[in-house]
Figure (cartoon, each protein chain N blue to C red):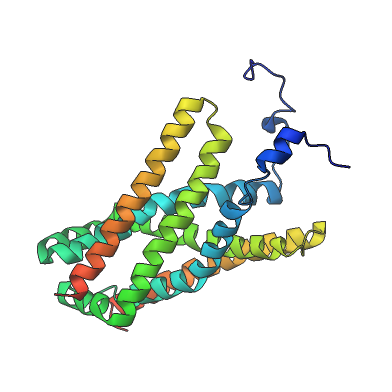
Length: 125
Length: 131
């Protein structure tokens, strides 16, 4: 039996069909971050004593540039998804909740792009 | 409609903390800290791009006592969030929800995070000394 009103059926609007997108993106970025972060931590241990020239050498190697850019994108995407849920759970003032989510997402995009730009700038010098 | 005045289910404070609940909130806390901690990576990358002077400033900060404490905290938060995140991914497949399994995996996560943090710091200081 279809419980929907004729008007609702005619409009054809149902679920947005993207209900699990947030959850799924969080899992996918989590999965990507396991190898990326392990690579990053091991690399950072190996370049602990690096001076500026050595750091430039490390970042500008093509494979390291690519992995660093992927790491930054996955990290900020995963981070802003997580902070969004935390804000939604604990902030009950609607205007503050929305403002904070916009601020977090804006900051994630800005910092992510800044980091990617830095990696490319280092790699191309 | 007033939604801020409704009775709440029993307050969290009346529950005795258990491993499962403590690890759960710790996952959130470390997630927040790690996102903030990523600022250090951003700063480091921009400093390398900016040149040796800016790079030395970051390196001096990381090498200072405060920097080392923050880095140690970041390191543990990272390993904890990663290990517990893998635990969550396993749960997502519908496995490991039995009480004994949840406790075993919980202690496993704690032990792995401490061990990996210790190992990383020993390795880091060994590289620093050129060993």
